[in-house]
Structure formats: C-alpha cells, structure tokens
Length: 305
Image (cartoon, helix red, strand yellow):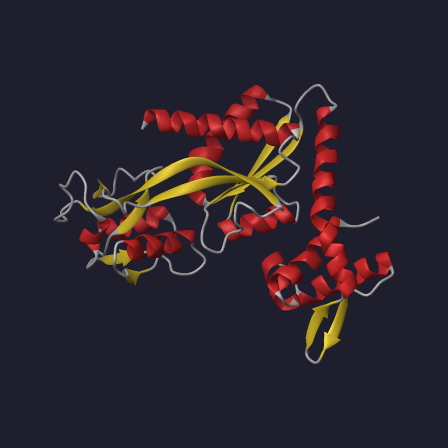
C-alpha cells in the first residue's frame, strides 16, 4: 500500500531540489522527509535517493515513480469523490484555507450558506498565506484554498491542482483624511510614487502585489513602516504615517480617519482571487458544495459593487 504522504515527500524533493528545501516547503523537519522517503523505498523495495558528495539525488527509480505520482493522486481523489457521492446527502468535513481577506469576505459568508444548505456538513476555516495553502492542499490538510496568483505560486497548468478564478478584487489607495489625494475621485498609482508605504515585506502576499503594481507604474515603493493585519495598516495610515494599497473587499474601520481613493488608468492594480483544489477532488460532494457557495458569494459581491 503506497502512502500518499510519502509520495508527496518524494515529489517535494524533486520540485525543490534538496531534502532541506522540501522539508521547509512541507513544514516538516529534514529527518521526517528522509524517513518518509526511506519508508517509501522500503515499501517498493528499491532505492529512491542516493548520496553524491554532500548532496542527495533522486535515483532513476525515483524518476520513474514520479511519472506516476500525479496519476495515482488524481485517481485516489476521484475514488474518494465517487465514494462520497454514493450517499444521499452532503456530509463529513470540508476544510477551507485562504488569505485573510478572502476568508473574511468569501469563506465566512459561504460557510453560513453551507450550514443552511447542508446541515450535516461541517466546515472548518483556516487563514494562511497562499504558499502555505498549496502546501495544505498537497498534504491533505485542506480541501479548498482561496489563493492569490503570486509569481511563485503554482501556474494554472500545474497538474496537481484544479484552479479557477472566483473574484476580481480591485485595489484602492488608502490615505489619511487630510491627504492631498483624499478628495480625488480617482488617481493613477504613479501619483503616489513619492509617498511612504505601509506593508509587511516578508511572508505577506500583499507586498508582492504592491511591488508588481508599483513596478508597472514605473517606481519602487518606499516602505517606512511594516504591518500585515489590515486593522493595524489602516490605523497607521490614519495616524499619517504613510499610505497603502487596500483590497476593495477589505472594510475600513469606522473609527479610522482614512479615505479610500479608487485607482484608475491602465496600470490600476487588481487581485485575482483563485479557488484551488487537488486535482480529481472537484467532484467530491463536499468540495463541489463549497465551490458553489463561494461562487454564489462572489457573484453577490460583484453585483453589489
């Protein structure tokens, strides 16, 4: 019997190049990854890793096995979907992870819808950055991920996932109420090129989006203060410490003296929020119900805007 977690460990080494890098991506220790692959090698009675100097390389047998991994995983997910569909009602556990704004604006109301439509289905929500969401999908710790297509994210052609857009989320410029741009009906992002920016640089999808948007507008943002949670970011803007890009779906606290200014022009930034699942799982009744509820919430949000 092949353990899918062990296959994932081997695939991670192939993708990231080293056991250490694979362990970091999977949030395991290097020894745990080595043990998983060692047990897989024992199950198959063949060597999968070989040491060459200080580095470990995949054997020819490992490459042969990797050629079957995606097929094995996809068929396993399809089998789970067919078994779940054999019951008359949608039940069990649905685990949804995603970036904070998508959890708040999409997953939370979708969960309320699911509780009404399928009272026997339990939904668990988990806030994570996009890169961690993909890891959770691969390790079977999540069923649906709400992610942002950052430069280091798996491409739409990645055979391990099925991905589809759910919501286009425009970015606004958030400024203090007394800022010279506060009264504008719309500004170009380049108009804020000399501003001080508030964003956390590391482990934050928003920084990547800001960098890409500013580069498209011809400048590099000068980051002066770092914060990640939107409440903290908005508070710093209200204090006159800088400006930020704020996703349209993120609400502004009423107590914060800030103004949301729409960005216009050809380079006006917008996020594309994606729904991602493991390939083969899209027909699982719980997953299909979750995707449907998320689309309904996104459609209602789009109609209201």
